[in-house]
Image (cartoon, rainbow, N blue to C red; front, side, top):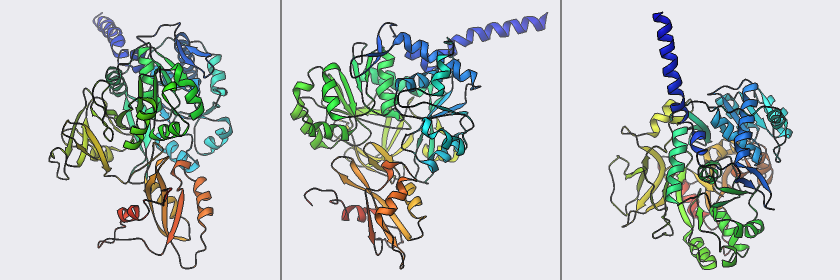
Length: 522
């Protein structure tokens, strides 16, 4: 009897604990403000693609389909498909089921995908139908398909499934998403983003940007990284507001849709292209908020956009590992060339190379701490430990300074990173592939100013004495090996690379030498 009593007591405690723990699931937090009849996604033509009732039903169906495939909480589901409503249903189903969602850039090539499959060991790989066989050949254990319309074998399975009402009980520290970020070692690192990271950053941004259920988000971003999947999707879902869901960014379509929206988020390239397309105040009368991120917004773009539209863009600063850290204010000065003030709950400091704080107007290493910061890198404990200080601050790798009002300005990067069109490129990844060519002695990949992309990737190469290497053929080879956004837009062949007295290649000298390469006036 005593043993039975203990089992009953344990069962009672478990049943009481389960609802509490499921409240930590990001899905539960996202659904608290949903009204079933409210449009969740609409098309450019105004068609309601899904209501919030559909959101509940479809995520339940996808969760049931995943369960039928044997996918369990904690398993990884890798997804490399084009943007569609079905991808969002799959993503939120994974959150709901405590399954780790692995978002992959659609531009990744075979070599990159092979690494992700070997490193993350996904229980399921969701691929475009044209790449399903390739994914299996690269080592994926189980492959299902989804095309740009959302159709495919996984949707077929979900449509035949019942809609599960289950929400997996998880801890705030349980991993919800793995996003790979390229590393200075050349091997990408999987940033483990927790349910707690997602919820805390979403709530903070909703408050900072005064988000409400009446907002309408014009969504033209990809949904395989933090900007489009987290910021652009989480905020409207948290408040139960509607999203105009565009498959891609096209300036003419954005100008058509802006009068139907209240919020638009973009990377700097989007804003330069909208200016080129003739955006003016007639397009922006309903918009209350324009935000920019993923790459530095040039002060001249900020000024030109304000002159054309009467709106000042809210620039903010975040990264894959931390979500958003700072933002220019909704009420208060929005300073061009800065990324604003720290968000609520985010601690930051700027330190010198010895870890001592620097004064204002003095550049130093930017470190952050808060509930938004990742718990670590997937299966890389040494790199995780090296990324945090003894007192728990995460080293962003960015060089920053603060002005007299405490606004943060990103002035450089400690890590050898290029940001092209809002996407991160680590030179060593590209150099590793270039250096495999038998005609290449060595290479240096750098970023140089580009009016459209912010920075353009270029490669400066030293060839062997007998080499007949043609830059055009090398570029075509690279396109088959790495994502297109990483491929150099120009390859320059030189006799030697500049070096310092220790023999290290001086990339600063190369950047200075080629900084006007894409200057129209050069």
